[in-house]
Image (tube, rainbow, N blue to C red; front, side, top):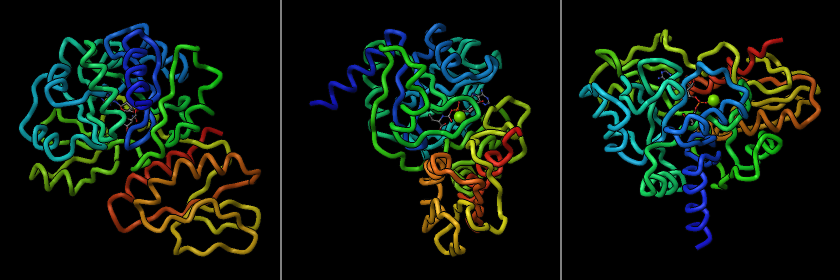
Length: 314
Ligand code: TXA
Ligand code: MG
């Protein structure tokens, strides 16, 4: 009962033009009605995000997805069938519904059906009330670490939210890394951001080898510096006493080093990465060392995030 009321409240708040932070299987999103220019402007304001960066539209099913886009290639339909609801965003030519304030003035729009039940309930309720889609970037201040718990969202935005804005608690995010973004505007799929839907999964689904070159389309997650903690982060160096360490469990902790995370697999690494970066910020350590995993395709997404997180503008 309590949950139903919470869903109802969240959908209503969105429709009224407020911000609602909600869980997805990847990271928490900072949501607003994607057809309401003022509501979307609030996202940019509280995030401190540049105006020309596009946001992803979240919808509950394929029919609603089709309202936002045009020119859907066959391979895109296959991807949608295989991986939605799930940690994948598809970029297509926009329909008139996708205004400049969503796409950053670009001709394309990114849309996703998230796999998290709470997210889907909110989206369905919102759509039943007449809503068309929820714009939601990750619920962190621009350039900072994405949140994978509702507490992390509160820590980030407590001072920026109005009394009408909401944070819906849905526990820890299952994947912990943002969705794979696939540009579907060309002949073959093109990966704009690595995530849990991997290149070989895309190939299996479509029978097409995805391109992996960086797109000319603006993706804030493709900035060199992003996802950055406040503590200095270095990759693949020998940690010394007083340093923090994030690495797979098989990597031993040298004497005097503070172990921040010891995930047993790359899946766990993805789940724990952002909360580990946040935890490192709360400890008074001089420097954080991360050892990037390799060997499977999820490592691509983890290494990508760690590399950008370590490129903090000095
Ligand atoms: O997992 C996720 O995707 C999370 C959850 C909340 O759904 N959202 C997320 O949003 O990571 P955000 O805004 O932090 O990152 C989305 C990325 C941005 O880098 C944005 O530039 C890119 O998606 N994007 C959105 N629309 C695009 C478009 N039309 N073309 C290229 N990139 C686009
Ligand atoms: Mg983000």
